[in-house]
Length: 336
Image 1 (cartoon, rainbow, N blue to C red):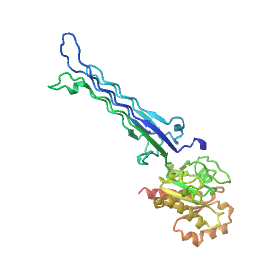
Image 2 (image 1 turned 120 degrees about the horizontal axis):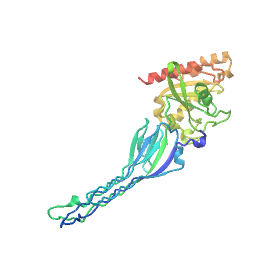
Image 3 (image 1 turned 30 degrees about the vertical axis):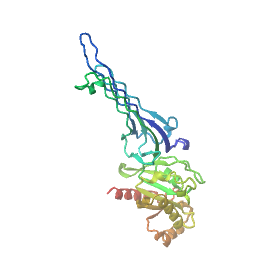
Image 4 (image 1 turned 90 degrees about the horizontal axis):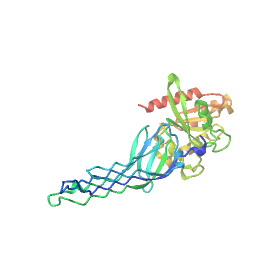
């Protein structure tokens, strides 16, 4: 999947179907002088229904179609025959999608499981046929109800990637390399900022056939919560992570300060994110000697951060298996 194919935000126009009109037919049969009313009811208009599909990973399919209309209900007819209901329009979305009212910003639906359905816009009700209005004072009513019109809405769909663990870090901090080492994912890797332009997902195969999902979001820079760099566009993807793994390169002069900048950006975006289980991982330790790593491990500034700190090298494999153990342990703590 290319960056161009990763679409996680779209606006769509939807319209439910009109209800069919009730019939005002009067029964006419040979030898029946006063047949009376026998007009059937109109069918209901079709609904606009969102349905989650685990086989979809992005909102890319909306690039080609952004207008959706359900069928109108059919009109009623004689012999009290009701018109057929209009067909519902089903719109498939990935698990993790959020549907909002574009005008008000109200969250209408938030999906977390495959196969969920949400009736976003109900079709118009079909009108009643004239036989409903027969009374002692009006034996042959010629009146029937028109169908109620369908409803139009502008909706916004956002995708929040579902993953157990989210990698958070500055550009070129080693997130994509780590993802490629612990999973079968093949993210773009380069020695320049913003190599990752879309969230990448990978499945970690752990011991005894256990697995968990990790995501690597594009790098954060100072001011991301205010729109700098790639902005906060991708920050919503970590809202559903159980664990946040902060990655800082050992090349950084002040690892503690770098970590605090990342924490501050998340806090400005959504302070509730900091309630999640957290881990600080110092990357690229193959660039250091054993003594340098020992010095970092005993660094008082890192100890004062009040967070578990782990050291790795994705190149040599140093600390990788232990990192998997730590993430698995933290995930299991979260499940209780």
